[in-house]
Length: 261
Ligand code: ADP
Image (cartoon, rainbow, N blue to C red; front, top):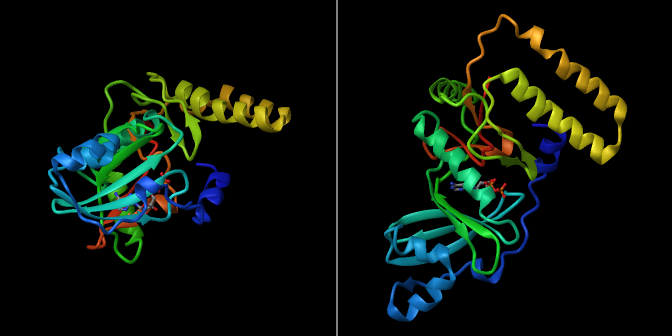
């Protein structure tokens, strides 16, 4: 996480207007033969009214606070669902988010929304449907958050080494997660090295790049006698991705997970 990333995200005023498909609607929508034609054009409704076990969607409301995607709450007779859509990016970004949420969820430690479904939108772009979590008024206790995160780090083991099954994005910056059995190599190449290359390409500052590369090359001896085991990391943990549920339990969201030291 870079300070630039935090700064860019923390303004939290980047909620654009909703496209027509997701505008707030107060009309009850029953699953019926008449509805099934429009259902096929809207895979979100289709999933909620089938695998989601709802028979009617009672309300769709916009959810603010995100910076990349459009977010909505779907209220139904089978409970509420949280849905994000992106009009231009295909399902790979949400597939990576769902895999990350799933990996953290599986640890049974800190609360994260359970991912349900990812898919393409017929008009282009993609969607993700997940458990809706009713947030509490505050961010909860930071000590509880720290304890729960530590539990997740301990529980989230990897037999494949350092990396993740898919690349993901931190904000909108690609994050390379190619598996490696050597953490120093993984961190040097895919984290420091990759960021240095991005900075060089964007700002052309070779001095910083060369200094950074010297650091990458001198990392190995610093960790020579350290036992390095992979553990699961949220990967994009900044204040906008931390909340608490209505019982005050910490909740973390919107990850860019990978296994690291
Ligand atoms: P983006 O991918 O655009 O950054 P986020 O994942 O941060 O979007 O979600 C946008 C906002 O929606 C968050 O700030 C949070 O307030 C809310 N939110 C995220 N996930 C859930 C959820 N599972 N249940 C309820 N609200 C959520």
